[in-house]
Length: 339
Ligand code: KG4
Image (cartoon, rainbow, N blue to C red; front, side):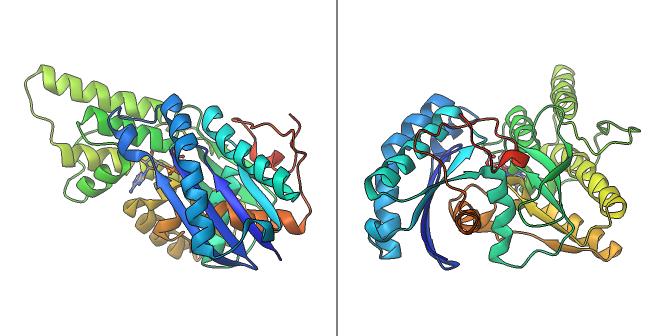
C-alpha cells in the first residue's frame, strides 16, 4: 500500500483526494454546478476554465486536510477519461506536473471504474456482479467476473439517463441538475401521463432515453398549446417510473441470465431515491445482494479515483509522462493508454 493523491476533473467537479493504506485522509470537491445551472447544463469551455482557476486551491486544501507533504506522496493518480476533453486535460496536466516534479509514478484511472469502486468504501465485492453505472454522461450495465474485469452487456444507444433527467427538468422549468428536483417532486405525484416504454419488446440489455425525453417534451408542448396546465409532480412521477423501470427490467433479467451474486450502483443517478428503493426491493425478491454507494460518493469525487489507484499501484500500472486524455476511453481498455 502507499500514499496516493488522486485528481478528478472530468466534468464539472474539481476534486482531489488523498488515500493511505486504504484510509481516506482528505476528499475535497469543488463543484461548479451553480455556474452551469444558469445555462441548464454543463458548458464545456466554462468547465475547463473553472478547473484551471480552482485546482490550485483544491490541491492546497487536500494536502492540508490530509496533513501530508507532497514529497511524501508515492504516486499521483488522475482521471484520464471518459469525460469532457478540456476538463480532463486540466487534471491530467496537474497530475503530470506533480509526477514530474516529485519523480513519482503517474496512474491514469478510468472514470467509470472509479464510480464502481466507490462501493468498496462500504463493502467487499462478491463476484460475479453486475455494475449499473448511471450518470450524466453514461448508462452502462457491466458484468464483472473478478476485480478489474469489465464486460459491457448493455448500454444506452443514445442519451445517458442523467442527461435525460436534466433535459426533462428543463422543459418542466426545474433547476439544473434536473435529477434532484424530479426525484423530489415525483414523490408527490401520480403516474397519470402515458409515456411509451423505450425498446419495448426487444430482448436486449441496451437502453434508450432519447425517445422518452422527446415524448415528454412533445407532451408538455401539446398540453401547453391546448392551454392545459402540466401537472409537474405527475409528469415527474410518470417519467421516472419509465426511466427507472427500464433499468430495473434489464437488471432483473441480467441477474438471472448471468447468475450474479450482487448488483452495485454507481454514478450521479444512483443518488435517485426511487432507483435505490426499487432496485433494493427487486433484488431482495431474487435473493441478490445490492451495494449502493453512500450519497457523498455518488456524484463525481476523487475518493473513488483514489480507491482504484490503490489497485493500479499494486498492479504497477503506471503511464509515461507524455500521456494524453481520452474522452472516449472504453472501460475494458482501462489498462491501455496509447496516445
Ligand atoms: O456522475 P455525475 O455527478 O456526473 C456526470 O456524469 O455528469 O452525475 C450527474 C447526473 C446529473 O445528470 C444529475 O441530474 C443526476 O446525476 N442526478 C440525479 C439525482 N442526483 C443527481 N438523477 C436522478 N435522481 C437524483 N436524485
